Image (spheres, rainbow over the protein chains, first blue to last red):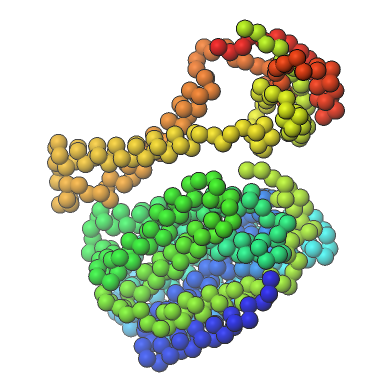
Length: 376
Length: 176
């Protein structure tokens, strides 16, 4: 595995494109930046969430490649920085900053700029601290060879899962749903979680295929691991569709103006084809592609499905964020491409840097042996 | 018709997996393997072909969904149209949850019944049990004494070298 040299260049070019956008069309460029920031943050959160779920459930199958999701969590500070950049322009991005008079009661209290920024800072800090502690303990085990550490990490992970459920829900309400403050959906946080988890799995699968081909995990990750990851991806893309539909159907059925406005702006003109493409990339294609056992067990085949899901997540976020400000006929600008390519390059660069800081396989983990010899 | 079989009883699933591989690599015909629970990796060790049940599941799930969409369309739009909230008669989004449930029902039940059918499990069938211990904590490997080249003492030694706690021969009625 050689360090991606041009990744920094690409990330800088993406940053420059977004900076240009900020000068030309701030609202549009900030939407692109929010998409990139939430995507990158989602990758980091997936990493630490995945590790936590494995510890909390006492799973052994994933131990052989545990260092990969751990390294994914190292993008949290960069993702936080992108979100912070968007929030610094909150009056441009979020209409409720100027429309305080339109709200009453709890909503007025909740959508208050200092409170909004304060809890954002708190969420980002909490995630970063948990990620640091879990990864540090896990790496410490390599040196101390202390099997007892596993129990301590498990307790931290269980704590994180509880905190994560609350903070991630509120963060998706705050940063994305409040772009259209009069619209609301109580299932929005789970919908976002489903997208975050399935796209994180897709990224994890791609990284594993790559690391297996280029060396570090060649003798450790086998088709059994891909088979199980494929099953998870199959399950969670379907979960995403289930939640997507749950949100859609209730609003379609009730047909109340303040709810349907969200979908009306997303099925017209420019957005219509993308609205359908979103379902194809995130569910229809992965569902049928992952049905055969052979696809799940063949690295280069499952990698293709994972690539499609990863692109689908981007489109999903784009459709959540962009239509609120762009109207019915937006133009795909250079800062959209810049944010997409730049954040992906940044992700690869930061992942590689973190992955090299520790042994590629946690040799002292008491569950490693089981992970290397298990059958589906 | 009767046939002679050799039964090896084992205490441990790892022994069972190893001996199954060894017996198969020697070309001895394995009639069946009995275990108190599903042993992971046993199907590969026995060299069983992949199960065809997923195809039943897929085909019946798909037909169940298609049938249900047609039925909902027929009941709400053709046979007795009912105006619900001013929506079109054939409102597809409203059909989705029920279509999903019926797909799951068809796929699930058909898989179970197809399994009963191919493994010939039905009420009143006399169970074929290699050894009563396999219903509790023992594993049994049953080898057919297929031809004259079958050398019972040698096979017995092979089974015992893999940790068989008991080996015996017996004649059994061949399933029709």
